[in-house]
Image (cartoon, rainbow, N blue to C red):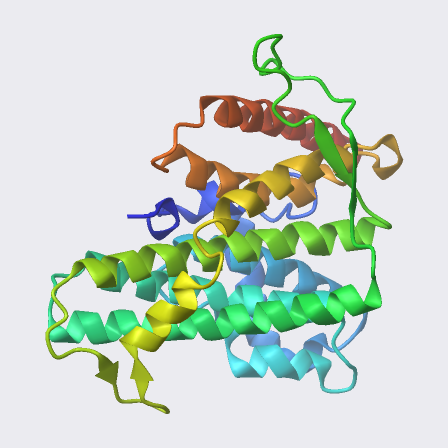
Length: 313
């Protein structure tokens, strides 16, 4: 089974972040309770909307290890706080991300349940939903790319790591640069969502193909969906390749967020994405010891930066 169908069950393993997402698990629960008490319409603007936005991001990452729908993914919370304004591209990307936890849970349930007509049907439905969400993500990227024709570009990395060696060279000799901090935030989040969706599609489709299908080739729903059609979509795409590619892109973006001008604030942006990457690499069939060491070193740097930032606040 792919690692992203076996993400850490304790949400704190995936959701911790010392800078941007400074809400602790306990604090998050209290903040969410207050949020629910006030209701969506009380978070339209001002500080209330800013706090709501932080909780949206935190809830999405925290939800990866939960087995229920993230509260902020419900329709009222997807629409209410924007009743008098248009959503930004970042808002729309978070809308997609907030739908991921439930689909990961459905994919895990279908992949781990005993093979039967019911489980295969559930797996097909989850797979179709993942493909639909991937379509949303692709459309988001196309729109974002239209707004910023040059989203990132490569430059030679100046960072050093214990993983560097004369024999193997540098693990990430190239780092990505971005036109702005805001674009960098959106791109690293985009790649994180892409990892989660693509890895789940790849893994779940493999599980379904490995089982005895018998009569289960279609299911009833809003549309009649053929397993053969789904398999063709997957086989003609890059779902198998993109999880590793997106993981590498995230790692190559880290150096940008450590720039002095960001005063340590960038550290909080990359921690949760790096934890997703580590969860993927540490459980994959491909042996990735250098990558894991590199990520652990980077997380150590982030924790130091986060502690320093917290002391200043």
